[in-house]
Length: 227
Length: 381
Image (cartoon, rainbow over all chains, first blue to last red; front, side):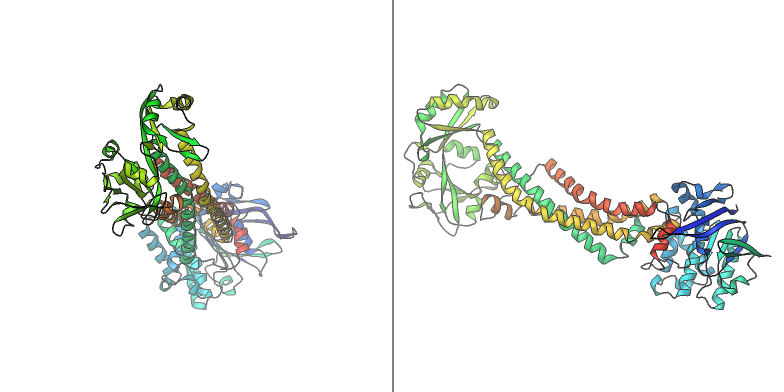
């Protein structure tokens, strides 16, 4: 099922009550089996768009649709359940510091009633896919920035999501690691997932795996290229 | 989820241990302050229920006075409703380790306790006195006279010590009635009071005027209910001292609750992360409940068990010393099983419930907020 933003507008209110429009009339549809890239300078609202698509925040106006379902209008409990179909990797990975990498990967699987052995198998598999299997036993606080980023991506992948939303996945990665990350995204896309990637890394913008490229500027999304 | 919650607790083992220790200490203080007055009251009430329905004491201008036994018994036995009446000889004298209660017993009373009646030159002593003896029993009578009632007194058997009477007899010396009279300075054929059993105990209070009128001297008559009430009032006064200990405990509980709530509020980003990874609000609350249970259940159980042991464990000295002034090894206090269960429920309710609320409320608030906003607040990790 596709993931669609329909006239989505988002206004951020700061602590003083001042309002700042971040997104202003986003209309876009991401299809299954597609790796879409959203690029744009820092602070333009790429992460906010991903959060909106993941159902982590509600749009000020407009609707986010998953297939025919208006996700952004769901009641909280329904939205919580829908979110199990989403895998999100944040720009700051938000790993649980006192846990090992493997344990961090088990966190999304815990409420899903999957046998522990299967959870571990899946976790090791996705760690291998992002080139982070040797890190499985390390505590998250001991990792470098690039390693944390890849573990964050692995955590997003471990639930075999229908919608994969990834924020700056190649940040802090050397070229070899960035290639592994792009390959992992392509693998998810080939599995039929909707993959939306927010980045301003030229290595990702120019990657052959990217199917569609949008530019986000001044709160609006503009198509740049389609392969 | 339950096993994972233990792993989650162990992420911060020092903090978990500290909270558990604080909860256990609170349960201990609160448990003792609730158990102690209840145990003393229950024990005293049990003793008094086994006592006489009515007690008649003579009073004169100087206070309590001895009653002529034969004459008094003849009069009270003639009062309608009185079933049995007997004179009692007892009082406080100086013993080997402090004051002891000397009791004059006759053959019938001794048979009731399952012991031989002590003759002149013989005595039975309670466990509290026996523990203090270092040789012959020497007592100091009310007029300062030193009396050696028995060169080798016998210790009251365990079969007596375990009964209600045994509780009273802990610091007692049982001697021949005439020996007791000599120690207490009573004239021959005189007793300290009269213990009456009546046909209908519920009508005992109604018999008080008849008894007062029948005797040719001034008396006060105390019913069993009066005695229970008097003891209850005394123990309540002392019990309220124990309850004072629960005031700082309540303050400590408030501090703990505020700290727990602030700590959980500080971890809103963690809840938001779980939500963004597909956890529902119910999953988050289940995790927090299980995490709270791993800490609180063992801590409260340990605290309550220690409180129980501190008050009701056989051989515990301090309640007897505080409430009854005993100096030897006192007999155990008792509490009805229902009473102990109620106290445990109270302890769990008074500490566990507010603490659980302090833990769950911030988690619930965080779980129902938009995760994206909280993650933005939490900053990079």
